[in-house]
Amino acid sequence: MPDYTSYLLPVFGVLFSFLFVFIVKPKNKATLKLLLAFSGAFLLALTLFELFPQIYEHAGAKSTGVFVMLGILLQIFLEFFSKGAEHGHMHHSSDSTAFPWLLFISLSIHALLEGFPIEQHDTIIYGILVHKIPIALILSIFLINSKIKLAHAIFFITLFSLMTPMGHFIAGYFEFTPIQYASITAVVIGVFLHISTVILFESSEGHTFNLRKIIAIIAGIGIAYLL
Image (cartoon, rainbow, N blue to C red; front, side, top):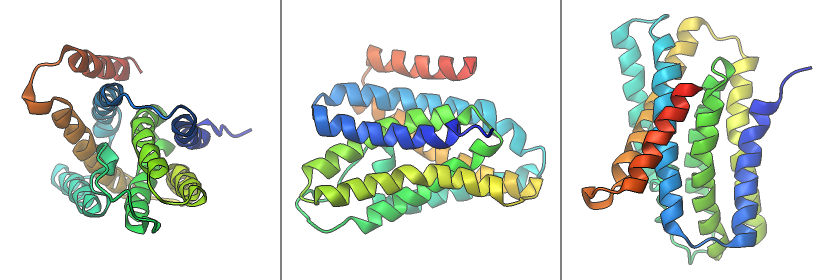
């Protein structure tokens, strides 16, 4: 019987985050920032420990580096439309009643790519999950506090939750050559590198020392190493 855990975890993580925000309506931004700092460090560490070592086995160093840079550029491009929602920023107007299609499409492309390396790297699912939960919480707060209809908000968050499992499914269903798989994984690494480093740089506002955030970052790296 196939193991559906890696398919279901991202879905449950996003939907439960939305349900939590809908019921509890959290207002403690400091806790969310700590969770973001932890998730950024955790995702960055897992990317370095799990994904980076294998992509150089099937392609040259320079060509692999090109795909990593393409991933970074792709994420920068997506953020023109998402306004940085992938790393905790929500700059979209909360007064609009229109469905935020650009935000949805950019986040969906990002989430779809996230699912690709899960096929050959089981532990990366935990990095993606820890990354998705604070983002889903922030996104849910925005959707619920906006003037978007609740049905549209539920539609948005449900489809968004399915994107990462869909990326995982595509990676497993289609037969990619080792070079093709390594190239796509390199693009995903670029996406992860950009997001995680932006989260870490932004987690220390004004570049002031914050012991709690330092502890959260060290904890994220340590747990990723133990996995």
